[in-house]
Amino acid sequence: MAVVALLPLVGPSVWVAWLEQLARAADPTWPLRGSSLTRDLSAIATTAFAGLTMLAALAVPRARAGAWIGLLTVIGAPTLRLQGVIFAVPAMLKLRRELCLVAAILVATYTFEGLWLGIGLVAVTYALSARFPVLLEQRPIGDLCV
Image (tube, rainbow, N blue to C red; front, side, top):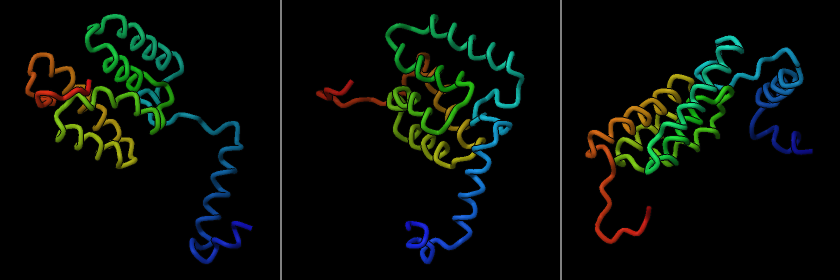
């Protein structure tokens, strides 16, 4: 019923693409890779990389642990989907607004390159912010947000 009602609005090509996607999803040989950094590596390398990011979580500074662990979760995810980037938000919110906005725009391109350029911008800038506090957003006096 919905197909018939929406056919004049979206056209038949959208429904054909939707059915093709259903066929791919039902195929057990179709790889579930997402946009992970390790998507083209072997299962052993992917597991080792994920394990290294888990071990790195033990070495993050306690005062900034939430943001760092969120970034490490995104970087080490073996099957990163776009909704998984939400774990990088705590680090993004600590950065200057213009840097955060550029990173969000890059992630919103929905491309592998844009996604990782945005994540990389957040990760590198957040890592440098310990040495260069000017990269962090300066909160006005009296701001109660953490």
